[in-house]
Amino acid sequence: MSLRTFINVLCMLIAGIQLTGTVATGQSNQSAAAAQPAPAWPTKDGTVNLPDFKFRSGETLPQLKLHYITLGTPHRNAAGHVDNAVLLLHGTGGNAHSLMNPLFSNVLFVPGGVLDIQKYFLILPDDIGHGDSSKPSDGLHAHFPAYDYDDMVRAQRMMLDQMKIDHLRLILGTSMGCMQTFVWGETYPGFMDALAPFACLPVQIAGRNRMMRYMAIQAIKQDPAWVDGEYKTEPVQGLRTANEILLIMGSSPLQMQKQAPTRDQAEQYVDRYLERTMASTDANNMLFYLNASRNYDPGPRLETITAPVLWINSADDFINPPELGIAERMVKRIPHGRFILLPITDATRGHGTHTVAAVWKDDLAEFMRQTEPAP
Image 1: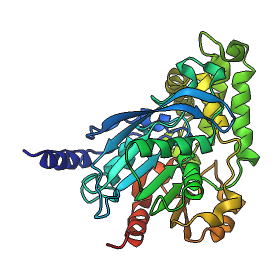
Image 2 (image 1 turned 90 degrees about the vertical axis):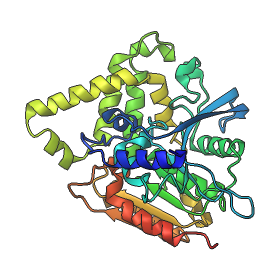
Image 3 (image 1 turned 135 degrees about the vertical axis):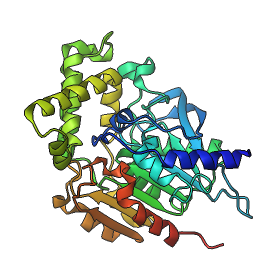
């Protein structure tokens, strides 16, 4: 059996798996990854090392490590340029495997899917501060450079340069990755054919969004056990409070009521969530990735985005509530932008709808057809 035949058979088997369980709806995609194990896709791991990486804060790391996984094979056109690479960007607290969630991958990556791995070369990085990339918990703790989204996007571009990827067919980003997608469009116009930011707003993180992040950060810092980031064991009370705030941030009232219709079930839901997140979260890592959004603000430069944009939010997104009316105003300033607000249904999952591909895959498929480069 050839490798291509084997992969086709494997993908069809995976596509036939019945999706069970619930998708986490928090700002952190790591809980979505924990809720369902990643399927057995034929991923390949890679790592790039960026020497003397200088952050926007002025701080420098002697070596910044970025880990990533890939699916598929890069293809070069007649001019020698890669024409099938897709960059998939995860949310705050997630990692390269977050979008391997079956609700995402089993819908998009299969034969005939919108991001069929026989057609596209998919690249899923662990962002700075996440997964197996350089992060505070590696040893620098609270002395790790105060990275931001601009640093993350620049590091992603440098990673692609090392991988010899000189063009992207699509950037699709969820949550934090959604915000990075806007930064990509403004920082490197022309590097991609299309942008698909899902579950964010292209404005400064302020109002309730920043309040919640600030409360989570302060909960950790005000815990005496944090000891300025040099704790030997996790600051349990502060970390617990921070995780509780994140649970509310990503909540979907309709789904939570369905999943926990009694008092006992509601309390058990919280206990299970905290058991999972407390075991997998480092307090310093959380401080840094929550604060990475502190100076994000692509609003003033939206007119400079030249690539077509498919921007999708969900009406039950507590982090990006539709009643603010921000998206409807801002999309008018994106030269080739389209905004879709998904109505609340049994299929939406609040903020986490960005990972439930069945809800929006038809819109993405049409967008890919519309932005297909001329031969």
